[in-house]
Image (cartoon, rainbow, N blue to C red; front, side):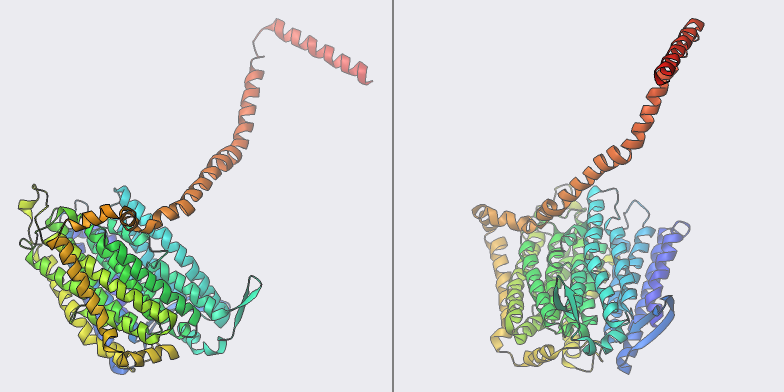
Length: 640
């Protein structure tokens, strides 16, 4: 059943992509959705088997390649971690496929290509999470990068979409380079890329050293850091996050798939998969915690001033990914996967809910041009409330259990990194609640600011769009309560697929003995954030503009996303373009093309001058012969 769960989406992608014209859009939609439904059934069945047996199930497929003693096999690995991820990815992706039928109904171009890309994206993610070795994982890793490029740039006639697709592709290549070097060093140290071989010999290589820049360094720390940088690109951590907001140029179902179930969660999965290695690299874990906490706080501050409904939710994704990396950094990988699963439900719900709003107001995405929509689209309004409550971590919604578990784990871990993660987590919880309710109040409450030409036509989305919203809303309500005991309370649940170091085990135990205020503080600050948003956007709606006028540098700093794009443009883009222009105009046109072209021009000019001597006059020819004879005689007399 596990192989069916992985390869059915590939079959759907192939049929929709290759035979999309003969079977038509309707046929492509139906076939890809059927493949996804069957894949989901197979995935949930396989998850049940894995949890029942409490052991790994493997599906050998074929030998990929062999070079001397280095051999890589295609093999599907279903342990608890993989099975949980496969179940989540197929489930969420299925409902995104169904939702897309309604959302893309008025797309003028053929949508068979769109559904083919969605299924290809799902297959690549499934191949990533079921990989049995790092090379196979890298295949899925690059697959989701390719599929994201195709989907973000789906509306290729828009320059902004093309630029966003290229940006996502290029930025991810930076992280992927470090990841590839990390894989190479792992093979150098362990002589294998298989997870089983690597994890079984971590203790044997704990003391290995690399000599870099004339000094010895801990080999596993270097490898772990390289793997983390690779994860930073895919999971949009601070520094390599700049592609994520621009990815909103793709259709809304693409945003939901990228941000909820695939791609951005790949880095979090990699950290959990490599937990036996990371647990013996305390320096790298500290770096992961610091970067994760900074990402959570940074993205939350930027989300407070964004005006595009999808970009607000995109920055919330970036912030929540920071939480997940904080959990990995404090060696409690279970909490990061727990939040990954609950986040998949409420983030897919929020993006698809935003798509329903956009659909209702004729593709408008600026929340300043909305308002008062709750009466016209009440179901979308209700599910957006559910998603926002889960995102803000309000009891009893899913985010309450998973986000609070991460904040508690950081506090229980202690030390500088633990306190950094806790403080950033609490501060981000306040800001998350604030910008979530800012969005709700501006979109659904207050006076209507909808274009008068559009306002009479605002309506609720069709059933094919609202039904997936309803299912995801149920998950956003109950997932946290249902999964908490298994994910965090039962040591046997993960059956060795996640390994905690001594610090992680201590943090898990310490989470049960925290002071009451420490556990309640995230909820208290979240409620304060909601109250502040209510005051600023309902009670005194002139306050936000007044604050922007009073502190223009701060407002511009946040509105321009801390000027990361401008900084990178100055440091990297412009110098690279200048160098490319120099190589083109001087190296290519002047030297490479200039030398042969110059010689060709010289020959052409010389032949033109010589051809002028061919006048057809016998007198001129005789005179020329006489001059030549005189020159020959003169040379003979002087050289004799």
